[in-house]
Length: 263
Ligand SMILES: O=C(O)[C@@H](O)C(=O)CO
Ligand SMILES: [Mg+2]
Image (cartoon, rainbow, N blue to C red):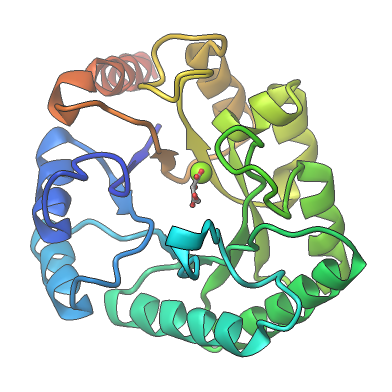
């Protein structure tokens, strides 16, 4: 199995280029991030080139975070800002060679919000398709993201079908999906054709994926059996020292080496 370090959480205590090097040293196969915009894209690209890691994805800006905003793309009347955030994310992704942009919906609800989201996603898909960039949408649970528009995988699947673009995909974060809906391994199987990226964390504390109510050894076996071979995003809260939380990664790497030596 392959894993991507989410540098929004892992090694978040250091500048992004340094965190990229730490992920390489720890044995990750790729990296991903949340909002890299304070760091010049050239510096990130240089660290990626030096380590040979790919940045899988990044998020659009959330808007006015101090006022509780958590994305702009489903907010009626905010289309100009939403599209500027999409343009900014796509431009950054192009410079660093990132394959995906997560378009954040925001805190809202109702039919006008849905229409705004669909229209902004169509825009994002059209712009992203020029450089083969995938657009991701991610349901977030109500504890971490109260009032977030995209509140379930079924709503996400409906919207993906309505937008009808091949480069619009679901970000299936086991942490959120377990809290929102449960039944995670049946759900990942059912939604597989729509899924563009998978993320993991322990539930309910969002720590390393080695404890809590989900047994990730079982989850990893199921995902592998379904044919998923792309890196899985480790998006968990490591506390003060990320390097001390990586026992689960070493265990997975050892297990895959043993599987290969038996072939
Ligand atoms: O799960 C999350 O919170 C993230 O994947 C994210 O991109 C938005 O907060
Ligand atoms: Mg996530």
